[in-house]
Image (cartoon, rainbow, N blue to C red):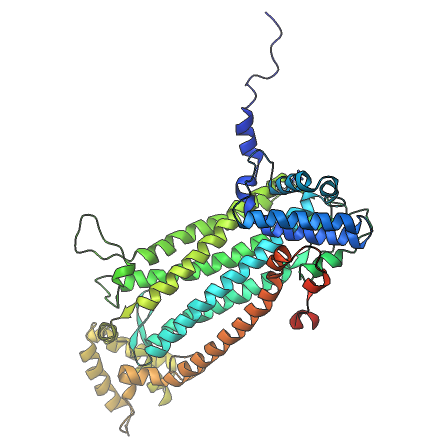
Length: 498
Ligand code: ARG
């Protein structure tokens, strides 16, 4: 018998092995950022005299011709490439010869991919904020159209106190407002250039890293080369902000789903945007909110996958990081699609105001108001609470009986009752009393609506300033070769003031 082969299993088929290691099947989505980043890197090299301006012109023209082909769908990614960075560089060198082979001087795919991901996240955040603002506007419009509609307010999904529907809807506005703040904070931390970090230790070429950052309209450069290539905390943070947003959408959808059920009947589902049953002819199903609720699971999965892949990575770059992409792409795509679907769904939705009112008349919803009233007449709140609790038990869920018992009790407890004193026992009276800032009283809700409207205007300005930065990628790709680079750097009033 001959010597045993050391390898007990056959070597994997090479194309399966390539499919396992290659990222080109998904990282091709980064091509715009990759080419813009390469243009910025080449510019930095040329400014430092590392490559000649002739080589720079060739590189620039070559990269832009690749961009044109990509935009027109004429560029075929090679599935045999390890990743898009290799593929684009190979094509560049095929097109322009030796100059193409100089592009990667002083650069590694490690700082290159970190840059591409930052540019992708920056862009995707703005897309998301834009969609959130459209949803916010829809909510403000709905709140304005339903100012006098009352529905039950719940805790533990039990009737608690009556609230205005506009107040209920605006609650989601402020959740979305914080989602925008989180995304915008993340944007600022993401918007710095890692180029020049090289593979891990920095570059030995005398380049000015800030040139590339300026050209890409980023706030500045990263401080430490090891940190620059090893972390994807900005991606995890973006995935968290998107997950929180997705949870907000899911909760909102959960309410819409309940409200559409025969038990609630608070809304009429829009026919064109609802599903049916293949068997039960009468069915109208809240498919869109259900899908948004369901898709939030995928988004959270993406966040957990990104966090988990970062856990325990030693410095500096590790190939594990390649696994950030599909997860993050899916997170942004899914939340973006959910926002779009919900905004359209809400625009078509009709409220059953009569049914909301009927429902709010049930469940002794003004019991707290009665206790509050007794407190204003000198009874300690705990005692008032106990007394009203007894009345509630006596009434045994009968709202009419509760009101009668309350009147009798008040006639004994509170002498000198004036007309209007007991208005709070009606739903409107209860709502009108909640005047402290942030409460459901109509004036407060009107103020909230004004604040919400100015937040929308502020958010629009934020988007504009972010778009000035992110749009540089397309500007760089479409600018004719040979045009002066300084013209693309531009002046951002917001940036310059920093
Ligand atoms: N495709 C890799 C990624 O997405 C980048 C390449 C880095 N590879 C390497 N051998 N250093 O993370």
